[in-house]
Length: 191
Image (cartoon, rainbow, N blue to C red; front, side, top):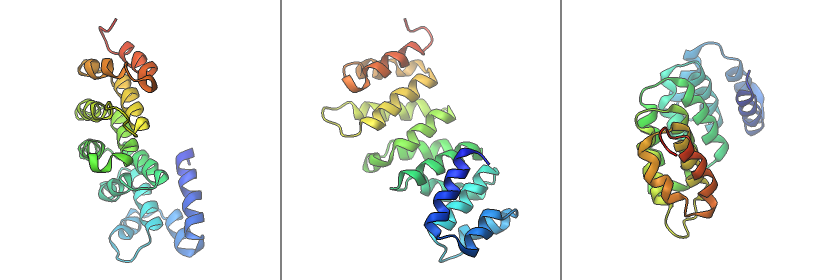
């Protein structure tokens, strides 16, 4: 069990209070048992999260919709776990979903993990979505500097030349300038 899985298991054990249902799901080897939790009415959120996470790590695409909902959740630990599982799921819809969440101005407060997921996926949708999101964050007094910084770092990791103009704009923002210099340095042909 890796660190992310251990962290999620302990968090959900505390949230659920332990008990038989938690132990059954945490130890389930049958993906159909886990997938059933995603479709059965009345299941608690922690149970759906545990089932979706485990299915996602196993590459079972039945977890996709639940993981996308969790990626857009208001609780950062749920978003982080969903992003981790989605990055390993291998579903071709993941990048489009993450791009839609990252660029949704009504949900920008929850865009940090979709932005990080886009950078990790390095999909065709990644750079355009990060560029769009960063450009919107470069307005005066924008309160979402963590999202902007994640965009700058992600664009640097992607090394996409289309990011040059927006990264150059980010140089004028003290909270982003150092990361923007590093990101520009990672783009081929930038000097």
